[in-house]
Image 1 (spheres, rainbow over the protein chains, first blue to last red):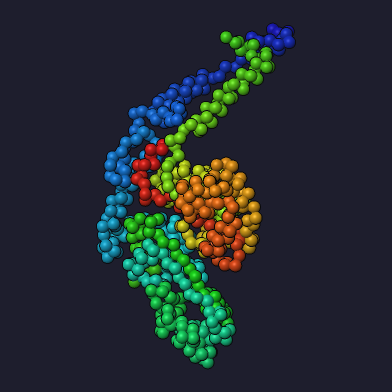
Image 2: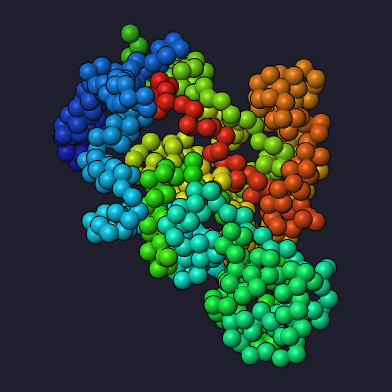
Amino acid sequence: MNEEKSKAQGAVQTTGHAWDGDLQEFNNPLPNWWLWAFYASVLFALIYWILYPAWPVAGTFTKGVLNSITFVDSDGNEKTTHWNTRSLLLKDLQEGSEAVRSQEYLDRITAASYAEILADADMMAFARSMANGIFGDNCAPCHGAGGAGVIGLFPALGDDDWLWGGTVEEIEATISNGHYGFMPGFKEALTEQQLDDVADYVLSLSGLETDADAMARGREIFQTSVGGCYYCHTAAGTGLKSQGAANLTDQIWTIADVTGAGSMRDKQAAVKRVIANGVERNMPRWSGRLTPTQIKLLTVYVHELGGGQ
Amino acid sequence: MIKHESIETNAGLLIILTLIVISIGGLVEIVPLFFINETVEEVEGVRPYSALELRGRDIYQREGCYLCHSQMIRPFRDEWLRYGHYSLAAESKYDHPFQWGSKRTGPDLARVGGKYSNEWHVAHLVNPRDVVPQSIMPNYPWLLETELDFSDVQDRMRALKKTGVPYSETQRELQRNIDEFGAEVAARLDILHAEENLMQQALANNYDGQRARITEMDALVAYLQVLGTMVDFSKYDEGYFTEFR
C-alpha cells in the first residue's frame, strides 16, 4: 500500500519520520532562488551591523565604522560623528544640491535691500516661489491661500487696505512682532439708539445713504468724547495706522460683513454689532519662529499680494 | 545533540524550546531599552503638562486627533523646512502615551504651539472650512459648548505620577520640582492645587474667547498651544543633538 501511495504522489521525498505506523511527512525543500536570497539577506545584515549603528552593548551601542558624517556646527567648527540621521540632515541642509542652490539665493536676498529685491526679476521670482511655501504653511491657515482672509476674523491681504500699514517696513514689522488689535465694545457706554446712530454715521462715511438725522446724531457721538471713535479712526474716518484702526471710508470691510449683507437694515445691524461688542484680534509674532530672511521673503510676497504701498 | 525527531515527538520539550526561542527574541528587543541612556537628550525646559493642558491632552486622545495627526517631526530636510526643528526624545518623555504616530492625514502637530492664535484654533476646531477651505477635518463644535469636567484631574495626575511623571503631592516632591523646574512651574505641577491652577490658567488666557466659562475648548487649545514650545533651540548648538544618536 505504501508503495502505491508513493507512486501516486510522484517522487516527493519524505522526512523519514513515521507515526502510527504509516503517517509520513513530505519534505519539500525551499526553492534554490529563495534559499540564496535568504543567505544574501543574512550577509547584508552582517555588513550592515558593521557599517551602521546596530547592537546595544552595556549602556551604549555599536556605532558603525567607515561611515562617519562631517558637518559644520552652529559655531562654524567641523564636526565628525558616526552615521546618524541627525548629522545626515545637517549635512543635507549644508551640502545638499537643492539646499546649496536655494542658499545662494537666500544669501542674495539677505544682503539685498527691499528696493533691490523689488527691482530684480530674478530675486522676485525666487521670493515668490519660496515665500509661497512659507506663506502656505504659516500664514494661509488664517489669511487664506490667496490672502483672501476671513471676514470678521482675519484680515484680507489681497486688497488695498492696510490696517497696520502697507509699506515693506510696516509689513515686516507686522510679521516680525505680531499685532494685538483691540477696539472696546460700546454696549455699556452707549444706548441702543446711540449705537444705531453711530452705525448709520459709519456707513455714511463710505458713501452709503443713511437716514440724515440719525447720521447727524451719530456724527456727534463719533466726533466727540461721547463715543470718542475719532481717537483711533480719526476725524476723517481714515483710521490711525499706529492703532491698526480700520479706514471706514474705503468701502473695504474687514470685520462687519457690510458687503455681504443684503438690505441697509442688515448692513446697519452688522456695523452696530461690531460697535457694541468691540473687536479683539491677535496675530502671533513670527520672529524667532521664522528666520529674518524668511520674514523678508514673506514681506515681499505679502507686499505684492495686496498691491503694497 | 537533540534530534529533530525527538523534539517533534515530545510535546513538553517542544513547548519549552519554543518558549526559549521566543524569549530570546523579546529580550533582545526589550532589555536594551532599560540600559541605553545615551539617547534621551539633556535639554532644559521640558516639563509635565499643567492641569489644564493635561485635560486638553485627554480630549485630544478622546476625539482621536492622533488618528490623523502625528507629533513627530523627522530629521529630513523637507520636514525641517515645513515644521521646524525635528522632535527630540526628551520632548515627549512625560507623555504617556506618547503621540508620535506615523499617520499623517492632517499635518504634524509636534510644533503647532504658538504658531496660530487662540482665535484661529477656536474657529478652526468649530468648523475647519471657515479658515482652511480645502480642509477635510471634521467639525468639533461641542468643544466650545461643553463645560470642562475637571473634577477628577487630581486622580489623572496621580495616575501619571505612578508612571514617573514628576507631579508633586508631598512637600518633598514639591521642593524637588522647585529645584528642577523653578518655583513658578513647580507650583503648576502640584496635584493638591490642580483645580485652582486649572481655573486660573483658563481664566487668565481665555483660550476659547468666552470669559465666563471653562470649556473643553479652553483645555484643548491650551494643550495645542504648548506643543513643541518647551525647548528653546536657540540655546543649543545643532551639533549637540547628534551626540544622542
